[in-house]
Amino acid sequence: MNDQPKKNLNLNILSVLKKYSDEDHKLTQKEINKLLEKEYGESADRKAVLRNLRYLREAGIRIGSTGISRANSRTGEEEYAQTDFFLIRDFSDDELCLLIDSVMCSNNITYEQRYDLIKKIERLSNKYFRDKMPPEALNYINTYIKPSNDIVSVVSSYIKLNKRGDVYLGLCPFHQGKTPVLKIYPETNTFYCSVCKFGGYMEDFITRIENNDTRCDNEKME
Ligand SMILES: [Zn+2]
Image 1 (cartoon, rainbow, N blue to C red):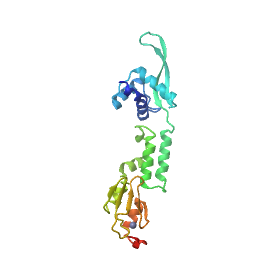
Image 2: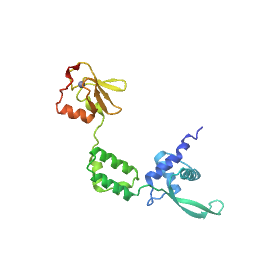
Image 3: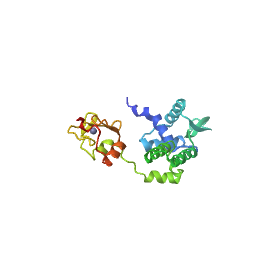
Image 4: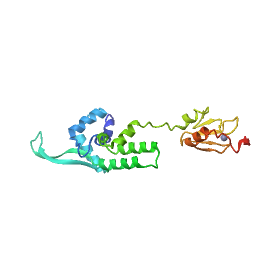
């Protein structure tokens, strides 16, 4: 079977529409073809593109288009066709800007959450959205550097860690002991010491170790 890539044609068409189309940027079937070629190196014939657009619509994807009547290039007969396709979005760009404004004004979220939210909102639109974004938000995402939230790399900058299956083990810095009982769980970005019973998120680890609060009530347990 060498028709394998064709299976993705409708998904690729949907991606093209998502990235390049809206009510102000409608695409003819020819333009969709060109973009498929450019983005995926995929050439599809006219009928395949139209057929897949129909599949997408049948699957509930809202795609706008204009109906035109024209003469068939072979028979010269009058025929009805669709052109100027675009993806109808749940949110208009104005609404997305409104959401971004409220994210920018919200004080109850961390810098990182704000960054992630703006990036998520941006993904609801297309490549033209950057020009419409509120300038302070654009400035924000361009200058904000996402912190590394990998607990293993943070904790290992303080103590030596060894990998044991899915977890990492190290000597707990919060009590005096000689066995590695501090467990780091990369999956959940958490840690726990089975002797001090102290655990939590990366922030808890940093706060405690930076405050030099290395004493532990259960110090003598080990
Ligand atoms: Zn401990």
